[in-house]
Length: 188
Image 1 (cartoon, rainbow, N blue to C red):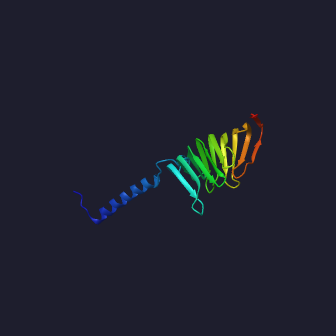
Image 2 (spheres, rainbow, N blue to C red):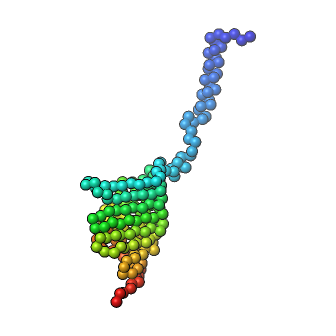
Image 3 (cartoon, one colour):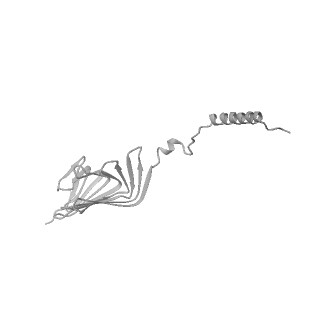
């Protein structure tokens, strides 16, 4: 029979420590269940059924953003939206735009609407203007909508197509560049 004395206990503990040391030096202490490269392409958070509103300092509604889903990617510093709709209220009227997808860069009030984007500018003093394009980019700095990729402007005067159509929200100014073509009807 084995007698337990201090010497045998000390030798046993040393053997166990040696086996554990060999095992743990071969195995990393922190092991990720998901490889790092897979995590870099996944969102750090997501939100569903978005209905965000922005008000001015007097409490008047300025802007509404709705979307079915938003995925934020901190590595790219951007948020991707599904089915976004933006409404901007102005004293002179309002405009609203939508697309199947949208992109907002972190720290920006600009939004890029993609995949069959449509924007409608409604003025108090004039008929609606409708923009259709593959992409419509709202730039907050100059209050403009830049339409590109099969850009078409529909107004009461007719239909105009161009490579790029820029309309300014607070004015009647529209700038068209690249293969500008129009079909207009006159009334007698």
